[in-house]
Image 1: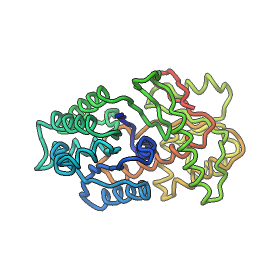
Image 2: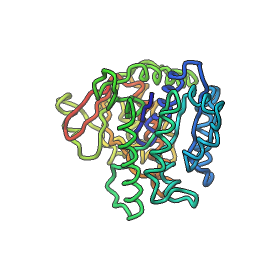
Image 3: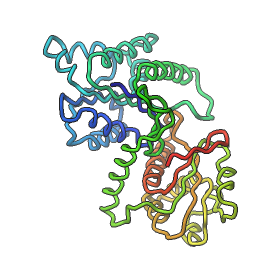
Length: 348
């Protein structure tokens, strides 16, 4: 079985992928984690440590493969014993976007032959292992003009992602912790929610909030998400005719605290999160503030995690923090809708 998992920054795709591959393994055969992020500096090292912590105690054996999948397979699983070990293995590869960058730009990478090299390696893993889950990134939706180099990177990653989707038994996009199926070969309609994964994410969220003493049950919160200029506010107004909106693009964070009991909804929530962080405040504080009120609340936010990783350190931190905050909110919200081209789809 092969599944491709995609999503934006901080979307919860890693947690979903780990849960999925562990479920597929079911205690038999070996469990491998192919790590493709090369430790370039302190920031990437912190990310690597976070992922190690996430998969700690789950039985993974980590393989640090930065380039040359086929060669790495030959070396790790050589001979009859290696082939048998691979055939019983369940493998999680994370992340395709890093692997492609390594192949394109590292000295030992495949360079112009990246597409062929990566697809050949993935095909071997699919054919020779029991289960394979691949995490990739949705980096194709942003308004910032690309350099020639970045345009080529996106083109190569896009071609590889399309090939992987064609090979896969299932393709899942994770949207703020909510898995959404785009393809499944065995009797599943595209665009169907993966209920077991949602339950798993809710369970993890409840465990996290037990530490803080906060109520982990569903709150009367409605999230409406989507790209910029997709008609999210207009969609919300078809559901809620009379509502007092707080504009996150204009109001100050301290004003939110004073007026929260009077507010019915927040528009431009992503900009409120930015200003909250620019004030040096923790996003967990904002989550608690919103979730601990009794009155219902509608939150409208742009999805901002789908472009390339920003160069600026604060922008990287902001994008990641916004994604994780939205994932926490989605896990507790009563309803989550996504709007594309003015058309709303209920994810939960």
